[in-house]
Amino acid sequence: MKRRERTRHLIELGGLVVKSGLIELTKDDRATLYGAFLELAFTLQAENREQVIALWHRQGSRALHSEIEAKGHATGGAR
Image (cartoon, rainbow, N blue to C red; front, side, top):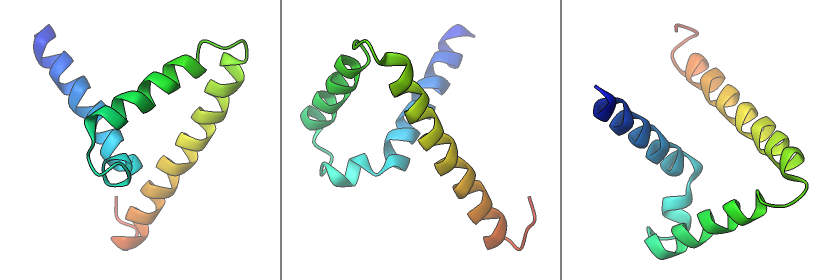
């Protein structure tokens, strides 16, 4: 069961990479994506880690909320 949960989690994370547009923006270059992720990890090692996380969380929450709203309007409000 743990393996199935891990697989689902990894698929969901991959979905976020796709949703962010990074695949198209990097022309699906795995080395570029990995470099970007390493840069994110480096950024999170700084003293302002909590502020950065809070900023990214707000931005992500807004984007997810907007997407949910857009889907609701596209389907005539049905959810």
